[in-house]
Length: 100
Image: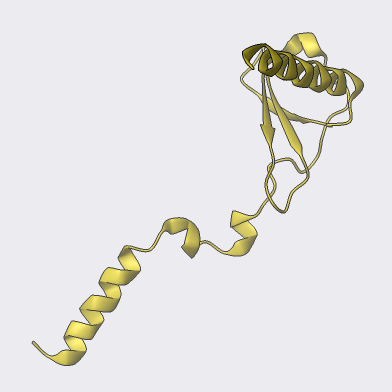
């Protein structure tokens, strides 16, 4: 087999085995999920809450609504959300104290 052809096959094999996230441009990999947030999302209309923390983005709160499968971003500084987080942290602290 020709040495140039062998080198080309080796390079193609290596290129196919690289991870797909490494091949994406930085602008697509590090894009924040929440570009804008809502301040007025009633707590009773939320089915599920997800928290995202990525290196180059601020703390992000994503809520899935009950009436639809729509997801919205909630401002993390919303009062009821702050209280929800405080209650969750206190609950975790209490459960850790009991297990010790």
